[in-house]
Every structure is written in structure tokens, then in C-alpha cells.
Length: 342
Image (cartoon, rainbow, N blue to C red; front, top):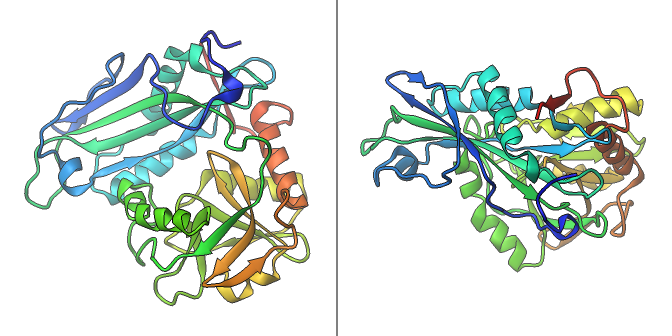
């Protein structure tokens, strides 16, 4: 049972300052040893690289209390690997894989009293991030960086059940071909803000983006990969070099094949064929799967047979199996569940 006196059942999905965070500095070509600190404030030059040229990357994962009382995280090694790839693309010094996992362990252990109790529906969200710190006025990479990780308790993404959402085909492009769509850079999310605000003003929950080259193929939404269920009940995942490789989506693909016996195909998916699918879901750390009931393409409604009342049957099985693995109800593949020693 968590020690903090928090109404876990009514906790929102937002930032709550916790006791400790982790920081490591890169200077003179190397990372220092890092430390867990109390100060949540960051002081840097007005000309810092991150402020001038958006040189920042991040990750997102969760810690939670499993059924047996252990505090665990889900596949942090993949977050470490993805952050390394993001750093390379942004000309930033990669934070070593083993040190990334060590930082996660340290900051979660230091904030163990903030980990929600089993069965509350809440989790401890973990945000590792890195940014250019020193003054940069010419367009070039910074030389000094900070790698930091903070945690914040968050409530269940779906309160009262996972109701299917309605999304729209966006008029904006999420990422350019051979651009940065495949990495987790802050700039990718900054460019989506206007699009998501516009979608909300029009009554939609999210945008779905098309390939910018031909605008005929499905890519992903502003913050999640897309997963589809075809007429035979099998899984189809849109393929593109501009899609961020979601850890949740990759895990769901394995769950579909190994646990549910479904065929999984990753291929280009055309907007014109969306009406042929039975179910649609958005995959991400926050919700695992957000069911989609309807996609609107400039007034044309594409309604999935699974409907607008509840998750489709295949999506629900995927959701229940993966969350069962995370919480300890179902045996996990080797290496998927990483225990935090506290």
C-alpha cells in the first residue's frame, strides 16, 4: 500500500510534483555519474540550445504495483534503446542503456511512496528526457546536456470504462519523409498542438495523419500508433518509416500472435480501405489501447462495426491480456516485467 495520502481513485492524468528526481550532466565529452536530487527547478542560459532550436528528446513509461506487491516497470530496455536512437538523430550524446535503466530504478525507488497501490487503477508515470543546455546562437548542436527523469502519479486514463472515441483525418502533416517522425523528439509534438486544438474545437478526440507524400495512407495519430482488426479477426498495423515505433504497439503484436493466436501483418494501409476493418485502436503508454469508434474524413464517416459503446472484442482481449501481463495476472515473456528493488 502506498504511503502517500492520496485519493488514488480520483487522481487525474496530470503532473503532481513528487519528492525526488534524477539528473546527469554531459560536459567536456562525457556524462557525469548522475544523482538523485530534490530540486525540481532547472536554471540555464536564456540562449540554451533547447530554447533556441528545440534540441530535446524524451520517453514515457510507467511503474505500478503488481498483484504480488512488487513495484515493476514494463520493458524499460526498449525505452532506453529508443532514446538512444532519438539522441543519434538529434546529434545528442546517447545516454547509455544500462545507465538509463539504473536511473529509472533509482528515481522510482526514491519515490516509492508515490507508487499507487494495486487495484487503484492509478500508476506512476516516468518521464526521462534530455536537452541541450549551453548557449547556442548559431544553428548547431549544443555541447552540454542534461539527462533528467521525474515521476508523477497519474489516475486511470479511462474513468468509467474505455468508451470509443471519434477522430478526424487531419489536414496537417505529422512528419516529413526522412524526417524525425520515427524518433521521440519534442519538436514532433510541438507541431501537433495546433492540429489537436483544432480537432478538439471541432468536436473530435484526436487526429489521424496521412503520409505527407501522397496523402493516401494511414500513419499514426498525434501521440499513438494505430492498430486495426480485419474482417477475419486478425491484426493489421500501418507501416511507414515516419511512424514512431510504439513499445505498447510492438508488445500488443506479440500478445496477438503468442497469446491469442492471431495473425499480425504490418503493411501500408490506405485511407480508402479503412471501412473494411472491424475494429480500430490507438496504442500508447497512457491508455494501452484507446478504442476508435469512428473516423471522419472531411464529412465522410467511417464507422467501425465494433460501435461507439465499448471496446471491440479483439481489442478488449488484447487490452486485458497485456494489462494482465503488466499486473502479474498472466505470465510475462522473459524480460518484459522489470522489478524495482525498494
